[in-house]
Length: 124
Image: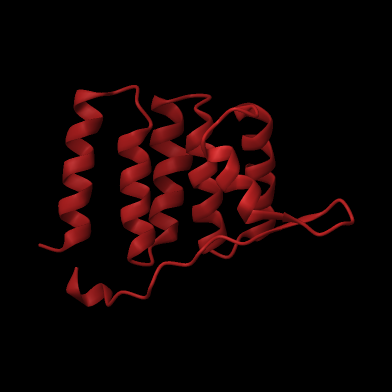
């Protein structure tokens, strides 16, 4: 069994124990991103996580990250802007979002998310 499957199982168990918490879904999404599966992360965050944790701003932050990794930068930027508006100025992750959403000076912004190292998905 690969590391992603093990991670997902652990986070699935946490989702059962803490059904209204965003953390397990974010952990699963980051596991998918780490092995180059952004569409799996998007499906999880936009689907199940958003249903279980409606209005949870951090789901939107990590959805923006997944969208960026999937090459959907316009949608990622829109999602990030919505997250910024919903999260307020006191969120710990606000610093992260401001770092990755760089103002181009003309009112538009671009994303500068770090890209995970390439992983051989055959090892999963």
